[in-house]
Image (cartoon, rainbow, N blue to C red; front, side, top):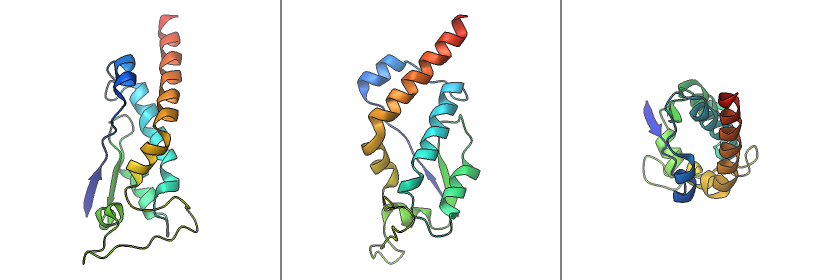
Length: 129
């Protein structure tokens, strides 16, 4: 079984505002669960095993989204074991295809940063009361 890990890179200006995100903290858990839900339309979908793999193998709050399936690496890079390009069925997930995390982040980074900023503000307000 292959392991596949994703590392999100925040824009420098947002990272400076955000400061440090604590592993295991409420904000990191929010980021992990939000990203895991929002990336789903980008995942190849036949029976849902890849989606379930991310849900079952990701420790929310760890800062890592983990997909564990025997074929995840081939799907992510869009290449078969023999090196031939894969053709993705987009009938269930129209955005499905290779490099789903790169494409998800390219399409949604500013929106995700805004959501994280709002959640950070909420947590800040809760802690100063």
